[in-house]
Image (cartoon, rainbow, N blue to C red; front, top):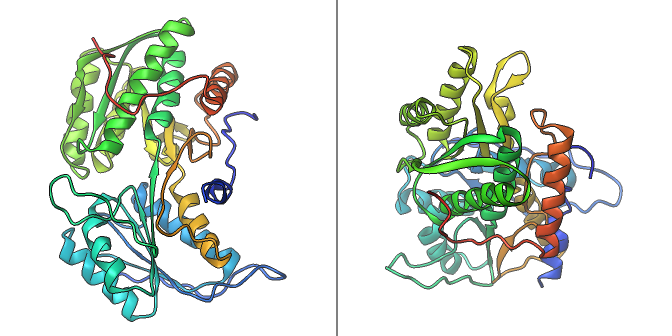
Length: 367
């Protein structure tokens, strides 16, 4: 693999194998034999908006990319709040405006899409990191033929980030800051711990993760709390923090910038998308060591492409993992040496081949 690349193969391949802020654009698509979409694509944002450096932005960028290729109209709506009623209202507004291919990023859409897939039978729904259900305790998922549910193997992305962090720091301490304690965030944490453990046992590193330095803040929008948690960890001697926490992570990134500008040798690992630019503090220098990436943009793009090609995987729940190149590290990792990138790529290959199996559950990993 070339430097820093975990090759992105179209998720459409894996799918085939497995089976009021409105932003609107019209043309700008490719010409020639490229098919033009005969449907409109709508998106409802979760908390935050399309520049949140996370799920909303990744989803939106995938839609914009699809527009360039397939010339479809697209629009996003930002709900007034984050309740089921708020989401349901905007789904209905999109449908009434003719946007009958609707993409929703996040588990908070589960109950609204559960109802929408029955109410709007001639629409198609994509829910990322969630599955439709009625919201009752231990509810069974109900993915109708007009809906596809997409998950990611976050533990595999976290594992690679853990290996990279251990190889870079070599001998020191690591920490983890999570947002809400929900499965996707937990899997990032568990995978990261396993990656550090693997590097310690196989690659000659000695990076320690103490229980005090594994914390779930409880939200995704409290930047001040993220900054405070990061400061506490750095004061305890932590050298690198993996933050899977949305806006809380932004606070942790800001604290890391402050520390580095004051002479500390500390790092932070980003999440979901490549957060390198978020960590820039001097010229093009960044405190982001690398990021544990979920290819959310590619997932949104490939669902639109699948619909155009008549291959929409309705009724299915897809898990995009290392084998389908749905997770990995960023294409470029300026703060990782060539030798570290080579070793991480080798580990990635072992995950793809099945030689390394990363558990998506908690183990006895931290001291």
